[in-house]
Length: 251
Image (tube, rainbow, N blue to C red; front, side, top):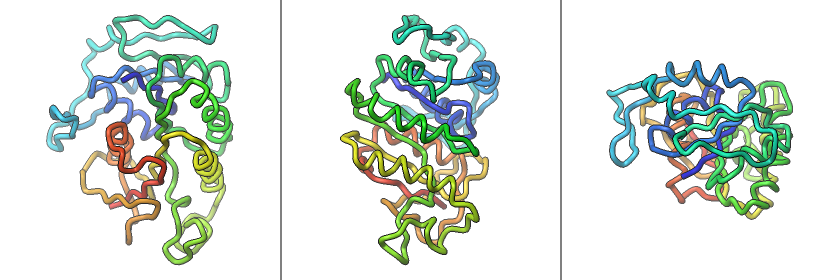
């Protein structure tokens, strides 16, 4: 598949990129710093994958430096660009908040994955407000994005989001409010979307010991690693059980 990946240099996005490449997908990544992506590309380790694309927990590996022959870096000057037939990773230099650069990144995409965070900026909402109609215009059906546990439904008040209740431990609601906008936009769209909503997200490797629940956080869940979150995001390309819903993710 041809996958457009946004947020490919973030804590979770860089791991999602590794899973996509190891599974044989062609990836177009729109990033502000191609140098940062190149640096991370050969230093980020994930579990080896078996023939079904599932992680082998005891076998961590990094991409070989020889993969450089399959990487191309492009500064798009127009809405369309020509991809090298030898490349499997197409690194576009730009900003996801720029509608023209975002449009260029969607060229030939079969699905889109967003690992854009909030990080005290408007990148998430500005990007998604433009991305959703662009995807629909180009007849791309599948969108997988990373949200936050704050926008899952409360267990104690069914008409409220977690961040609106005492279930959330976050003092600030800004990030949840940004992700809520994205969820409500997607819910009104005709896309086949999935929002993976991790709870507290420390850096960490894949363990496979996570729990998933539709639209609510697994009971008692307090954390989930970036490694497990990245795998769950990647796995949604083949998993249709959670189309048009939020995934609560925790140990």
